[in-house]
Amino acid sequence: MPSTYTKRMEQMHALVRGEMTPESLASALNVESNRLAAYPRFVRNHVFDMLEKHFGCLHDLLGDRVWKELCQTYFTQVPCQDYDLNLAAEHFPEFILQDEIEQKHGLSVFHAELCQLEWEEYVVFKTKVHWPDKKCATPVLHPAVSIFEFTHTAGSFLLAWRQGQAGQKDAQSMMAAPKSERVMVLQHPRTCMSRTYVANAELLLAFKVVHDGLTLAQMCDASRLSEKEMLQVLFAAQDKGLIVLPRDWGVA
Amino acid sequence: MDWAALKESKFGVGLRRPHFDAILEQHRGVDFVEILPENFMGFGGRIEDVLKRVKARFPIVAHGVSLSLAGLDPLNQTYLNNLKTFVETLESPWFSDHLSASSGHGIEYHDLLPFPYTHEAVGYIGDRIKKVQDVISRPFLIENPSTYVVLPGEMPEIEFLCTLLDKAECGLLLDVNNIFVNSQNHGFDPYAYIDAIPAQRVLQMHLAGHDDQGEFLIDTHGAPVCAEVFKLYAYALKHCGPVWTLLEWDNNIPALDVLLAENQKVRKWAAEVDDA
Image (cartoon, rainbow over all chains, first blue to last red; front, side):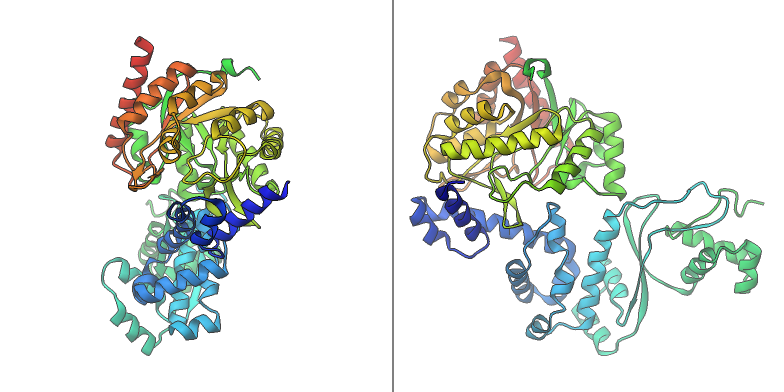
């Protein structure tokens, strides 16, 4: 390509990456700087909007000032290389783990786990789940469950925040007295939407017995639950999308 | 390419998340839907599920934003190959993308940048379009872009566009709102622009709303279509003959009934052209 074309496109690239100001380029191109300024604004805002879309809880927790600084630094340091705009947010969880970023903005493990969880919900949402057979003869475990062992209660916080029942004060308490928890994220087989659960004893039991391929009688033996109680556990897990039961299970 | 054989009058809307469920129930006046492959390609879950159900109900046409025809990077072969499979699965009658640059140095802008209208650019972009057509193996349309600046070049936009259509032997998705926005931003006659368009190459048109920033117009796709754009649309239809018309509304997305009412307005304008 001729050098003039290449030069112009390189200049436009520098403009949208924030390496050149609209004012300095406007005079070189003989155009109005306020019009030229629209392009870097749009490019930057696409990434900022995507970060907001995927990490709304983290933003709320950190407040606007810290959030804007993080977004700006991320935009500069981690440009998007994928045509799926959502993936502009993909590296944000790793980005906030950098020592320099953590120290500058006072981020903690709690923030990192929360960020990781929010991103995982999108990953799970996008995943193509290949069920072996939904019309199964024996119980089937969801083939693509993400399980996290968090050192802080990031899952509980995220779920409570979504209900409008948790905010900055709760997060501070959780950070001050960390408690570990297991969190499951899965794509619900009926709605095809992401679902996040803090794993309780019943959910983990359903996971284990189905994973191990036990019969109902073996499940009852292993858990010391009656058949009725065991079925309640399994139906609750099926409702949550963790397992699929044969159609005739539980029918007398 | 026998472009005339593909000409047909249809009216459609973009498939957007807020309408995923509702559009299958409520779709009076919608003959087809348009999708951005970037928002569906490679997705499982709800996105894949909705796409399957929509495909069973409507013809779907794919309209991309990531080819970066005017960009300096080589064409993204992974994207192109994925696209080929995707548009085949969709049975999209053609594929379209914008006459602009959307990436550089491996970085995706997710926006459409202008480029200089030069003779060399005709050759460069024309060759890239031919490569796209070779891979996609179905009709390919370029969309005339909206721009806020004109980079120093050698010819006006319409001359560049017509020369490129000739060189690349591709079709045109005529965005009527973009013509209007550019005519206001850069001071040219939008009707003369349409007069110069090779009518047989136009298979599809876009209509959208824009935002008046005071000093210039921005192509936001976030408002109803204004009266001037509808008038221009009627003029373009008279010039080009039957096309698929897509109403774009991508920001401040309204309730489906508002979108469908706007689509009915489009149909009404087109019917008046037919009756004249």
